[in-house]
Length: 138
Image 1 (cartoon, one colour):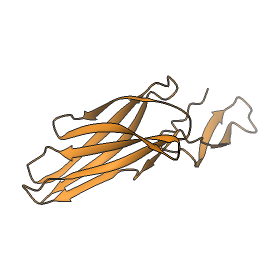
Image 2 (cartoon, helix red, strand yellow):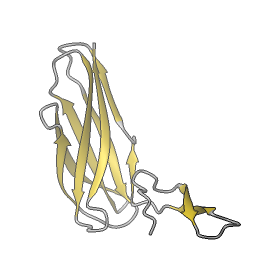
Image 3 (cartoon, helix red, strand yellow):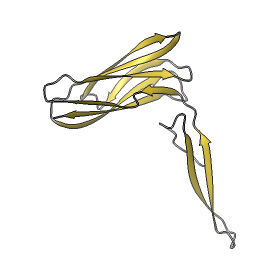
Image 4 (cartoon, helix red, strand yellow):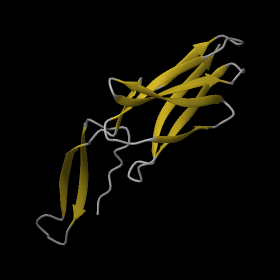
């Protein structure tokens, strides 16, 4: 069995090469190329957030998550949670539901800080959508 993690590859083609070992003396090893198109579950714009500023500045940003397949966002959490505050709200545009994700930095120390925001969905096949956040405080 071959498992391929396609997280973050929605709408793109994935190519994986598998090595197969046989007892055939002529061909003891085969290489199989597996190619497939990954279906998009959602569009995230921008794909990641970058918050940059000086010590003491208020840093925040937003991303819009638009379902390609129907789902409902049921929750949000940040990892680690003490670095940012994250919330979401439902948007209706042209009769389509999207979600506005807003993050605000709670970090006050200079440096680079990496956070993941996870949206929980009602779909067992895709229980989470993750948005990377980079905070740079100078």
